[in-house]
Length: 270
Image (cartoon, rainbow, N blue to C red):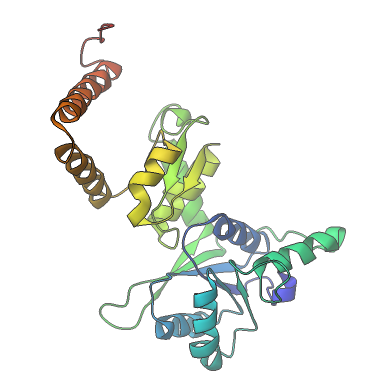
């Protein structure tokens, strides 16, 4: 990241959905005691420009080639603090590719920068509001804010692994650019030794759930409503026999869940 102009206390912008590079960049930023400034792919270039200028970000990571091209045209000319911009989707060998920068850093080996561990009072994230009542405002989230949330979850139960087990797997689809998704899905899972599949977006949620088969899910009410509607729409459009089987499976699933909680009898073989 030194080649990208990142130093201690630097601000690093990232315009991206959830992906492994997002988590890697966040961890790398924290290892230099730099601050992450997350943005959404769906935001307008004028919003990206405002946030980058307000935060005085020195580097920007763009998820796709389209976002990179739009930022080059509509953002960089008006953001003098930005000294470098990389694309996560660009192929290795391209000068603007994240993969190219990673390969170059790997070759440096021992010449890489030493870790600058942040203190609890150092700034971890600068998360901007939606700006519905004016210009977006940067909300300062310290490292102590994130760690206290994770520790708070642990202290909700006697054994931390009663809440999130090391064998658990989640499907991460809540945006990590938001503090809730980042705290619960990313850092809380990592802190408990759990794993996660990274969702491809809301339109693919049902497919991703079937592939990942999560044992735990951090979500919001609208997501559960979407899953509920998806299952029932599928059920109603099925043949009569299949519909009966699905309804019976849902009833048995409810009874099994009650039995696991100790509020109902164990199911018999039949």
